Length: 218
Image (cartoon, rainbow, N blue to C red; front, side, top):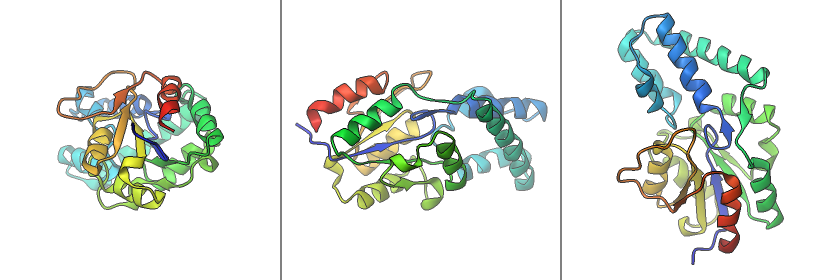
């Protein structure tokens, strides 16, 4: 049986219920400026870093300056919603963190979100101090679905891949884990993704189930 000594958590859509706020804010902005990027395409961006998303939008605008302006508008809408408490943590986040702490199992954040933005979100929810370390999107050259983020996280943990496990909600995140040979527990966001050729250790509906799954593996 697998023995867990380190746990990794994705942030957006996994620890923080933020992905759909991002998605629908993008969709609103694109409609307002008549950029023909449909909702289905935006949904595929979950788990990707800003650089990759910016390059995709630039194919429509042919202006990186305009892309950055659109992102600024999108971010302002996100921060406003967060300030109004319209962005929340996923259920049982504190409970699984408390459980891991009680068993002295370290855990870390592995997110494609850049440090500046992720730190602001984590500070809002008073979570930064909970993690042993954080790997942000701008800490690596290639973000998810590249394995670089998880390989870096494994190295920082001091354990090997077999002793680690990750919680992810996105196709890009799961693919990154597969390529890094890190077992991954799939926690669906508001809609289930098509796993296709992706490999998961198992699936849980929320972190309450995640606690019960981890118990015999510690």
